[in-house]
Image (tube, rainbow, N blue to C red; front, top):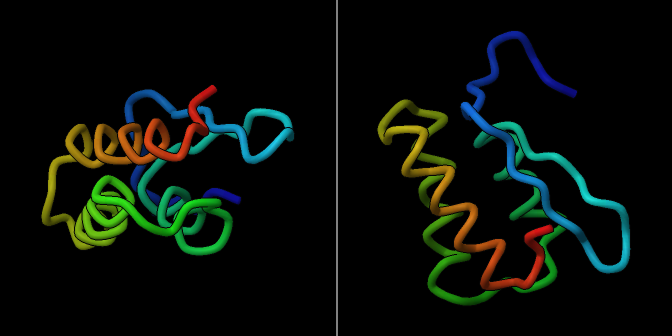
Length: 82
């Protein structure tokens, strides 16, 4: 569910968890929830960077394009990019 105050990326990222259907991640808040609760691989430099960057984006400390790229790299690292 998207809150009216959510920060959204200019282009969503679609990930696939396991053998499920692709799911759309629209911004750093959704990305952070996925990273914390649904991510299959909880290690690796890109995973840690994405966690840190998404949290910083919610505090408006990082540019959204950098945070999106960080999430994409974590998705590639976890073999989840669809």
